[in-house]
Image 1 (cartoon, rainbow, N blue to C red):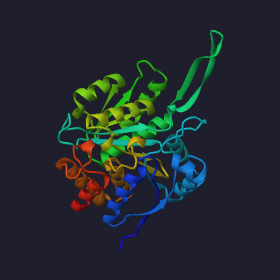
Image 2 (image 1 turned 180 degrees about the vertical axis):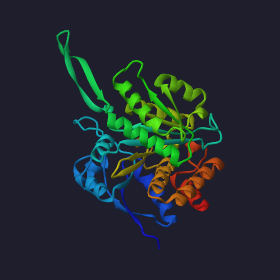
Image 3 (image 1 turned 180 degrees about the horizontal axis):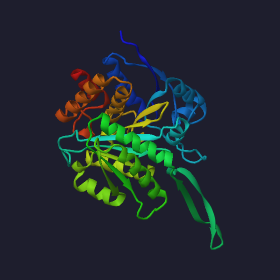
Image 4 (image 1 turned 90 degrees about the horizontal axis):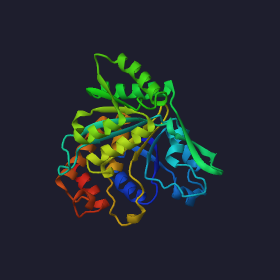
Length: 339
């Protein structure tokens, strides 16, 4: 029997427990590659330990260095900071990696295959915000400060180029707004260019201004291969990319650092359909596939990907959002049959 790999499992909120049940059943069917330490976060964390990100969850990830995380709900009000943001900062997960590939046959495009590398710790997402007096109103003006570092820009760019080399990708597009944000985005572009030059002869590269890039992605998405960009732009472009292939139901994500990695479905907790078995588990399952790849179980990852694609394309027992009349567990069973 192969050795199981220790990993933290966070079922999450809303539809999280249902899609977690489906995904763990499929992984068990594949030989249980992971030995789960189940922990809570989000509203489930408040219920379990009185806080949205319990110490036990942090300790578990610190030990396993690997986590599969369901969708989390950050409590509204009470000054709670985004739990996803806290996790990224706690474990220095500097690279947010979002592969987007056409799977559904009846979508708008049939040849989308891009991977977006988004810097995960800098830019405007440091949430350094505040009020300034304006026209006698102490809260009449707000400010938000962003920063980029040379180290951060080099690190995410190198990750994108290394990925391109390792996966036979042809081109990396550096996306920026240096024409307007001359320092904040300009420095990112300068540092990215330096790294790009190290890969000359191995990977092509170009640079695109973010607004033009958004338009071009919609007009001819097949022109994009690997994209590397800053935090805010990466957040927006990766959701746009998901829209090109039918939405967030098929969008997995990885948050990767030097010492830990957390894999997730990009969609939210969808409380309106929680407990109804309507949720599509594919994004979460594909995130588990990225996790298998990350730990070197490439063959298992490929088998899983093939089973998901075949199930979705034949509409075998799939959920309503994929054009079927099935439910969360029926699509899981269809995938298991193919495995």
